[in-house]
Each structure stands twice: as C-alpha cells, then as structure tokens.
Amino acid sequence: MVAVPGDRTASMLTFALFAALLVAVALGLVLPPLLRRAPAATVTQDAANVSIYRDQLLELERDLQQGTLSPDQHAAARSEIETRLADDLRAAQAAAPAPTSGRLIAVALAVVIPVVAIVGYKLAGTPAALDPVQRLGMSEEDAAERAKMIELTGKLAQRMQDNPGDPKGWVMLARSYRALDKLPQSVRAYAKAVALVPGDASLMADYAETLALAQGGRIEGEALKAAQRALELDARNDKALALLGTAAFEGKDFAKAIDYWQRLLSLAPPGSDYARAVQSGIDEAKAGLAQGDRPAAPGPGIQGRVAIAPELRDQVKQEDTVFVFARAADGPRMPLAVIRKQVKDLPFDFVLDDSLAMAGGPALSAAGQVMVSARVSRSGTPMPASGDLEGQVGPVAVGAQGVAITIDRALP
Image 1 (cartoon, helix red, strand yellow):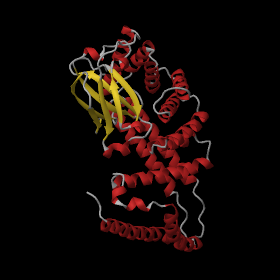
Image 2 (cartoon, helix red, strand yellow):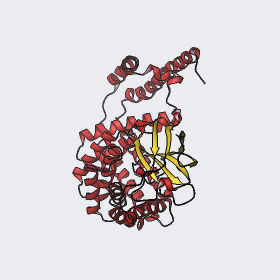
Image 3 (cartoon, one colour):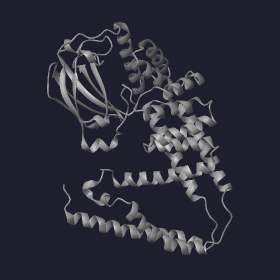
Image 4 (tube, helix red, strand yellow):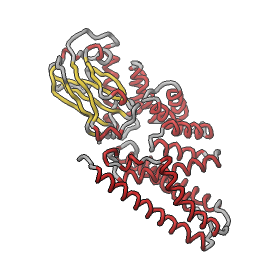
C-alpha cells in the first residue's frame, strides 16, 4: 500500500510525541537517583555483558539443534560462557566508582538531554526514515533489538579502549560487530584478541572465517593463513577444516579438499544435516578428481536472469556470494554447470553451458531436463547452509532461454 501525505504527517507527529515521551521517561528514571545522592551503578556495563553473553548462549543452542555441536561440546562451551559472565560481573562491581553528589549532574541532564536530542536529530538524524514508504521492512521489534545491540557494542568498544589487554573483551566485541554485519570492525577486534592469545585454535579459526567473509567469501591471503594456523594449533578444529577444504576445492585441488572434508566428516554428528552437507562436498570433489580437469566440449546451454525478492534485499550484504547452477532433474545432485557472482551484481543475466561444468564432471548438454537454482551463500562456500537464500525453477530443457529465477526463500 502506498502511503499518502496525511499518513506521513501522522507518522512524523506520532514520532515527535513518542520521542518527547521517551525523553520525559529517561529524565524520570535518571534524575531521582542522582538527586538522592545514590552511588553510581554498574548496571549499564552489567547489561552489556549479560546481553552479549545471552547472544552467545543462543548461538550455542542453535548449533546444538543443527547438529554442529555435540551435547558434550555444548555443555562445555555453555559452562565456559557462564564462568566468563560471572567473572566480568564481579570485575564490574569491584570497579564501581565511589558515591558522588549528583545534584549538579541532574540539573545539567534536565537541560542538556532535550536540547541535544532535538539539535542532534536535526543535524544528524534521518527524517526520511519516518516515511513509511522509505522504511526497510524491518519490524519494530527487530529495529529495537538492533538499536540496543548497537548501543551496547559502542559501550563495549569504549571499555576496550580503556582496557586493551583483555582478550575476552576483544572477542566479545568482535562477535558483536559481526552480528551487526560490521565485518571490518569485527576483523580488527579479532586481530587484537589473536595478538593477545596467539595459541587459541578456535579463536584463530573464527578470525579466519571473519576475514574470509570480509573478503566476499574468498578464503585467500590472511584468511587462508589464519585457517592454516588454526589447524596447526588443533588438527581437529572443524571450522579450520571446513575453510581449508573449501579453499582447496575452489582452487581445484580436489585431493586436498577430500582430505580436509573427510577429517571434518569424522567430527560431524552422524546423520546430521551438517554431515550430509559435508558428504555432498566430498562427493563433488571425488567426481572432479576422478574425471580430471579437462575443458568441456561446447554444447547447448541455458540463458536467463536472476533477481532477488525485494523483501529479502535488506537481509544480504553487497559482497555476499551468489551461485547459479544447474542440476539434472533426475539424477545426482552434483551441479552440471556453475557460475559465481555477488549480490551487488543482482539482477544479472546468466548463461550456463558446458564451459562452466564442474571440473571434468558430466556435461550439461548431455542432460535432458534440469533444475536451475540461484543461492546467496553467506559463507561464500558452495555447500548450502541454514540461513542462505535460494530460488529455483524447473524442470527446464537444456537450450531454454528467458529462464527467470527469483531468490525468494531462506534455507532452514
């Protein structure tokens, strides 16, 4: 529905009244404790710690449900997180400042908060964001959670400037930035933590993964070195094995990819979705190894166009990898032809033919009917993962033109 001018005016008026109410509530909460000469509290820092550790616990629960963590690994990781939270809360209480008089501060806040709010919004705000037409489709609850996360992350960043020798704090900050899709800042925070704890394999692997994401999913350069270092520190580190296997596969070193992924498969919970995804990668690498790297013969292909549904556009980053591939409608799931682009290229036209076949794999031209899919891979790897976005059409005949694919759903 298109908003009319009256709707926009109402939205702006509602915002102004709500903002005024929030300022009043904020002053009502802040001023009484100051006027009572109450001692300064460490609530803000405690809230930051609790919120960030809560997110880490939720991530552990998702990993357990998806089968990427065993119950024993989950219990050990949860215990470590709870211990770190307790330590941080005790440290915050011990560092609480001595009681001071707050009357002057209270008077200053009563005057400054409304003035700064009004002037700051006029200078640096985004009035267009009040327009329903220009909103991004994020729910109010999601927007509030993100705003809270941004605020807490900012406080944590300031804390780390004052305490740069705390590796756990840098890790928390790196994970917070990554959750906010601020990958360059996450990389820098991870680098600080790695410098302080160079012998931690899990930390090194997280650093490698974040470097790869910041490079548009390319596991090369510093990301590759970090993954190799993580595996040197722990030969059973699953994330390092996954990253190095993918790097080898994309470099068409299929024997090495198989080695890494078979070691990874031995660590995956049997029968899990993760184990099946790893096995699929191994099968593709074996096919490439068996056939060799011969150029495919020319033959008929498939032409079309890929786009992403407007409501999903804000869920991806410009540097996320987009794979377009064709698979036989009846037969192995191994792709017959694959091309790789980035979200920033969408929408784009594509041509799938034998020149884009997997190394030495079956020829697209030999297939009759195929399924054509497009997937946004957040990790930049060819293996599907929960949260990736995908669209599919088919079956279509080889030689078809005008094939339209819309990326319109998330993988469970």
